[in-house]
Image 1 (tube, one colour):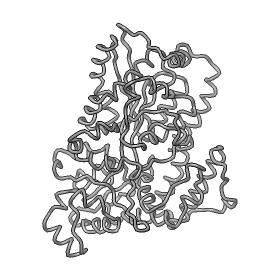
Image 2: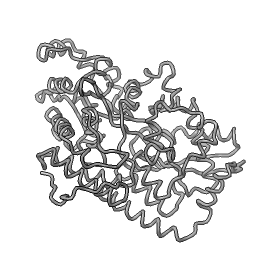
Image 3: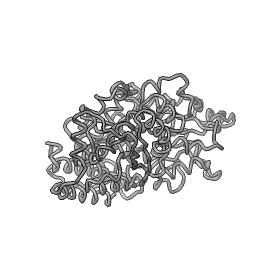
Image 4: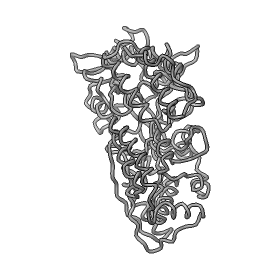
Length: 491
């Protein structure tokens, strides 16, 4: 992540340098074409497009794997040939790869699959195309309805909750709970659990939809059987990228806490509360019921633990459903919402929102920009979106999610649809300082999980003070950090 921050800084400097030079056939022509609203005539031409996506992430590859369908569509409708290639990078280095290219005004990557939290950095740097005119001027895009307002808020808008749109949702995603249905349905397990804990072992979607964290922890305890090589849970605590952050936030949000005030950009006094400290303690307490080494688990390790039969439950992204439910596990897995908390008499259940938007390289020449725009419109046709879902992707289009039988196409879709709402999921911050803020808290969250720090409240105090300073120094927030910031330490 430090490399990512370094590249971000270098990239922003590079942008200032390259802006002093002219680039032939680049963004000025594309911008003029966009503002005029006319089509570029590509009749009979062959245009080669490159998509940059996330390595090892099934939904990212689907855009290119489905490209032959678009090729046929473009040939019949517009008379041109579109050829696609795909490059990728892991989550941990994707921004670096994109930024390094975009900072030189290159059109090496015509369409980029961005993490949702990067919209602020990419748009502020002037690297991606603002999409309002494209959406308003295209009948397919302008008429497409999203499943919930959180879709635009998370995958399109920057600044937050504005109508300035920079992305189009490529893949929706939320963190869900994968449960070994064969274990919870087992009559012996059901009998023994009831005798030990006094309530029925949940075995249906409806029961897990109202499961409180204390009862979920009992389930984790029950299935922790080291002698049998079985544990109650696999969850992400890794320092890499946003792994622990994504797993911790549901504990904070579902227990009534917040990570910041997006209206004032206040972190100090919002993140570092006693309630949030308790949430961090509860999150880390699950390590007692996880396989040895779970403190270093990321997405891949959780997937391995679950598919290898080491755990009864796993916190994992809905987008990983195809990998989590192998042919050997078909019919043996129940996918449900994350557990929640009772807060002032109300059951709260809020997941982390993942997923990625498409963004368009602002430096595409007119021909490549035209194909990119055509591709975006094609992507949201109902038949395209349904094919995307069937192949393992998560659509965010209302008509698709409302279609008969949608929940049954894949085992994770019901939980995905349940959580992809303003009530049941939230995204991180979208500010340009995202990477810096994330790297800071990842180091200290995982430090607490690994035992390097022992007091959850002091860890949150340190993170909140430093993040407030980051935002204040950048002019993002008018709220200064605490005056005694030099004396605030994690311990």
